[in-house]
Structures are given as structure tokens and as C-alpha cells.
Length: 249
Ligand SMILES: CCCCCCCCCCCCC[C@@H](O)CC(=O)SCCNC(=O)CCNC(=O)[C@H](O)C(C)(C)COP(=O)(O)OP(=O)(O)OC[C@H]1O[C@@H](n2cnc3c(N)ncnc32)[C@H](O)[C@@H]1OP(=O)(O)O
Image 1 (cartoon, helix red, strand yellow):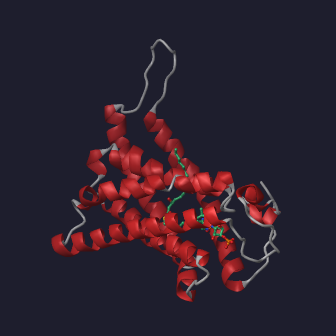
Image 2 (cartoon, helix red, strand yellow):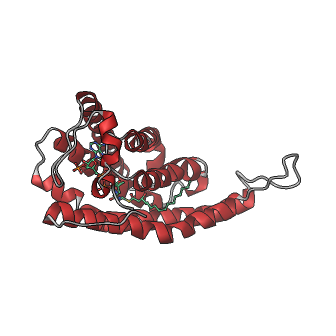
Image 3 (cartoon, helix red, strand yellow):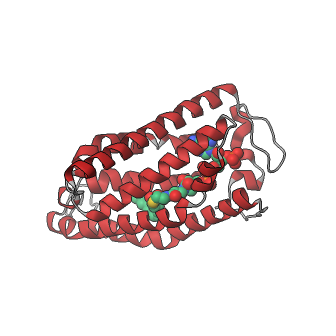
């Protein structure tokens, strides 16, 4: 999963009004793209901050995570769904992140939010979901504030440090939380047959959501290490200035 920056294509950036850059230097975006991304990143930082404050307040008031999902679900769904724009940013070339990397990252979260927690009520009180939400929230506050300060050319070192260190723990925590949540959903999905299409039907098509979930869980095995090692490479590049040459896959 090589980034376009590394393979020299500049992610289609020139079409989006960017200038070509010397390797290792920050890319310069057009005014419109800079304004939009600054607005987007500030909105996302604020959204995830609101979520963090709501989680802390809930826990302090109630002393339990039970009922937390109900109180945060609207904000969570809104800001996580808004993150679909990240795939659009990659596609139109205003950010150089690989579309595949952003696509896998965003779609797994959308899947968790809408097709698991929104759709399967009995699993909402589980601690695993809480673990994912905490991991996502800390990550996103750090990540979007990193992008915002970078765009404004005033990036405090501790935000850069946090962006490229927190994931070492938070990524596995989030992934284990997601996998345990899907696992906990399996009996309910099997019992209810939800989102499944049985034969015979006039289109002669069958789909079993239970097996889809098993395949999704299995897909974490090849995909997650790729994302994790990608972040470790980014960490070496950004924090330690290593030049990393990657092959396109
Ligand atoms: C339908 C069923 C689907 C099922 C899918 C199953 C998939 C299974 C595996 C998936 C596992 C994912 C699990 C996950 O959900 C769990 C968690 O997230 S737990 C919490 C911890 N998570 C993390 O730490 C996430 C880490 N990931 C990331 O940080 C990024 O999301 C990543 C997409 C990996 C990209 O990182 P990368 O470093 O490659 O690129 P960047 O995007 O940070 O930066 C590259 C340059 O682009 C500039 N940029 C990017 N976005 C913006 C923006 N919004 N505004 C401004 N600039 C932006 C950035 O500054 C960089 O620029 P430069 O190179 O000039 O510095």
C-alpha cells in the first residue's frame, strides 16, 4: 500500500491545483482545497472532542458504560459518516493518502457503526464497543488536530508525537474491540437471519449475513497488519526522518 507521495504521482494533486514539490517537503495546496480541508479538520476535531467530553461526563455521572451508546450515538454516527469524505479527498487528489488505505480504514468504521451497533441492539451495552469508541475518539482528536495544525503551519511537537505513537496501543485496542463486538453479534444474526436473503426467490440470489460477518472478521487478518505496518513506516519517516522506498502493490 504505497502512498502516492512515495511513488511520485503526487496523488493527482496537480489537477486539484497543487504545485509539484521537492521530495520530503510539505505539499502546497490550492487556496480552495486548503480552506475546505481546514474547515473539515476543525469540524472533525470539534465533533470528536464533543464525543470525548460526552463520554467522560456520562461515565462520571453514571459510573458505568451501560447506556453510553444511547447517549452518544447521534454524534458518533454523524461524525463517523462524515469521514466518508476522506475517501473523496483521496479520489480528487487534495490529500496524498492512498485511496485503498483510507477506504479500508473508513469502511471498517462505517460498517461497525451502521451494520453492527446501529442494527444489533443487544450488543450495545458491551464493554468491547466502549473500547472501540474510546480508541477511535482519542485517535481522531489527535489525527484531525494534527492535520489542522499542519495546514496552518504551526504543528506542536506533542501533537505530531501523539499522532505517531498513540496508534501503537490504540490500533490493537480498537481492532480487538471491533472483532469481539462482531463476534458477540454472531448468535443474534444467526437466530434472526437479519440482512440475509434466502432461496428460493425470483432473482435466484442468496446472501447470508452471518457468513458475511465471519468473512469480514477473517479479512482483518491480512488487512490490519498492512495498516499497522503502514503507520509504523509513517512513524519512522515523520518522527525519525527515515527515507522509505515502498513498492506499489
Ligand atoms: C464492508 C465491510 C468492510 C470491512 C473491512 C474490514 C477491514 C479490516 C481491517 C481494518 C482495521 C481497521 C480498524 C480500525 O477501525 C480500528 C481503529 O481505528 S482503532 C483506533 C486507532 N486507529 C488509528 O490509529 C488509525 C491510524 N490510521 C490513520 O491514521 C489513517 O487513518 C490512515 C488512513 C492509515 C492514513 O495514514 P497516512 O499516514 O498514510 O496518511 P495521512 O492521511 O495521515 O497523511 C498523508 C498526507 O495527507 C495529508 N492529509 C491527509 N488527510 C488530510 C486532511 N484531512 N487534511 C489535511 N491533510 C491531510 C497529511 O497531512 C499528509 O500530508 P504530508 O505528507 O504533506 O505531511
